[in-house]
Length: 131
Image (cartoon, rainbow, N blue to C red; front, top):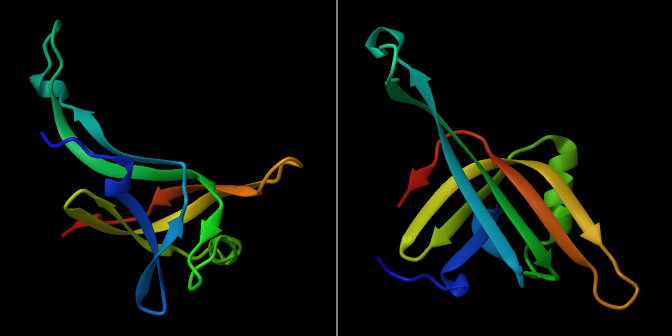
């Protein structure tokens, strides 16, 4: 298995047909979860059996202090307030995943002693395409 550095993981958002980075994010968490259904006829009194069901996921990032000139954190806020999906992709090493996300939470943290930074929480909304 290859060892990934933080620089091998990026989150990008689509604007006018082009994907742009949210730069200088300190942390990124990508979680993909699969629900499982219990097979009652295949279950005996001691052991359970399951089949895979639906897939869901979240993408979280924190510490965003700078954005690309062509895409800003406030564009995510505009999409959130409109209830519109954000078209995005995340890149992990050599794999690229394109998805639509609902923006569930955006936070601005402005401390008196430093720069303001932003935190986002996205919910994957639909199919995950792997390229």
